[in-house]
Image 1 (tube, rainbow, N blue to C red):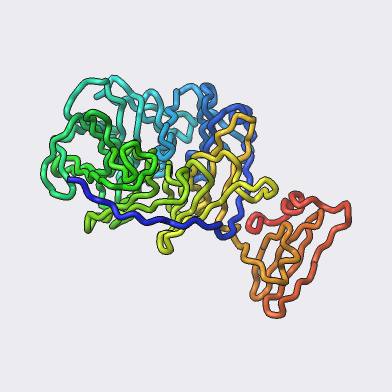
Image 2 (cartoon, rainbow, N blue to C red):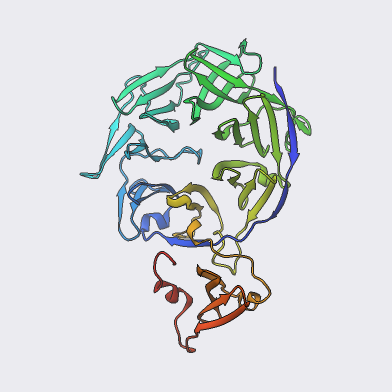
Length: 441
């Protein structure tokens, strides 16, 4: 039994103004790499980057000035951007995936110690989820043997114990009845607040089928939710795609709802776990519908990483906002952005796929989003317009006329007073900002 899907056609609009800044990583290996992305900003503020392909310095820790490379451990670079290579748990331990297994970072001597999986000959990790209480789950690429259920593993970082999990049965989430299928693999993706481990239930029949599901530890069973009649115009079966979903890249539990996306051009799919009803949010362009990451911005908004520009989906209004690169505007996202990662204070870091020696990444700092829609008075100052501070009814801002100017806008009288107007040979905009306090700049 498969559940039908309600499809909503979502409108796309230019997004509300957001300012994106540039962050340069001064590292030659990072410069030469093709894939460059932030994996983690840890609790101490360090930035952990992947630069790939690059065997000697594939994993880089950076503090804005100095860097340290961890290049000879064979760090696993995940094809799935949502999985990640470096993670920090609730105990502020830094863990990484290497060819030798999961590895723990020692901040004293700044080395990684790998913990091999004694239950598997292979150590390369395909999917890796970090949960609460020191629990971690991962999948090792199977050996090709034909078995009903391929195992996945649970690692307890408190006692360093590895447990192999081989589900005993497959249960249909709608009927609650056992199901019979082909060879089954479980790809862990996310743990919810109730401790359920959600993932991709892969079923190999004549071809490979991907399904949303979770592992029921009490029954030692996989519970899955097959769907049909979702909209996929690129399907070779029909306009109303009945072909199986391709690999799921993101599964995001948010309480009552579980969201998912994947390589198939199906947009954003949502399961209501209380009613078992599906909803598909389908976007205007096919490139918008192949989504690799779904990242919460607020309870009602998700960042989406797709084949195209950075996207922001508003759940309440069912609207998609787009943030494209603008050639003449340095405060827009870079071209060729890839993996998106959340850092401190909900900052958003955009990785790069580029072989042109690019070492500058785009980053969105929420604390800098004080810019607002310009009224008629301020439109005369819109070139390089940037709000720095608000005090009462006064708005302090800069604007650009070949060089940076500093002014104040009175919201009551709607008048502008220029406070600093440099001579022709005055400071450049970048130099001007460098003198501002970090809390403003």
